[in-house]
Length: 269
Image (tube, rainbow, N blue to C red; front, side, top):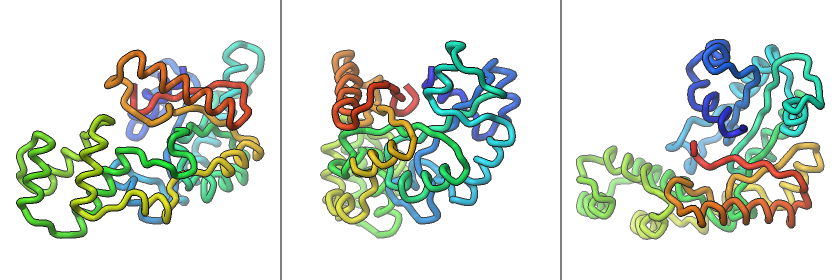
C-alpha cells in the first residue's frame, strides 16, 4: 500500500494540487516523502533531484499540518484496519535512503512540530560503508561541470556507455541512466576524473550511522527497509529481488531489534 500511495503523490504531487489528486485517485490520506533537507550544496544529490531548503521544508510541513493529521505508519495501519480512529485525513511522512541530514536537520524540525515519520534505510550504506551508485554518478557529473577534460576522454567514456558524444550534457544524461550493474564502470570513470568515493564517504559521511539510527528510534520515529543496496528491482531476477527484501528486513530486525516490518521499493517500482 505504501509504495502505491508514494508513487501517486510523490511523483505527481509536486505539481498537481493535492485536492485534485484526491479527487482523481480517491485517496483520502497522503504519503509525502523526501530524501534530504539542507541549505548546503550536496553534490551527491544535486544532479538527481532538487533538495528542499529548511525554510521550504518547514513551509511544506505547515501546509500539511493545516490540512491533515500527522500520524505514524503504525497508527495509519491501525486506522486502516478500523482499530484506531483519526479525526481528519492523515499525512504519513517518510524519508528515503537514510541520509545524514535526517539526524542533523530533519528530526529536530519534526520534533519541534510534533510530526511522526518513518525513515526507510538501505543497510548496506548505514555507517558509510558503501555509496549508492546514483550518488556516484551525481558526484562524477559535478566533477565534469567544474573541470575541463580532453574531448578524447569524454568520447571514450561515452562510447563505453554506448552513446555518441555530442557535448557534456549528453554524457551527463547517459551517466544518469546507468544502472546497478554499471557499478564497475562508475568506479573506472571516477578514477579518470579523480573522484574518490572512499574519501567522500570518510570525510562527508553522507549516511546515518547505526548509532544515529538507534537514537532516532529512541526519539519515537519508525524505521523501514528500502532494500539492501537500492537497486532497480525491475532489473533483478526474482531470486535477487527476494534476497534484497529478505536480507534488509532481517538486518533491521537483528541490528535494530524491531519487530514491525515496513518496506519501500527503491525508485518507483
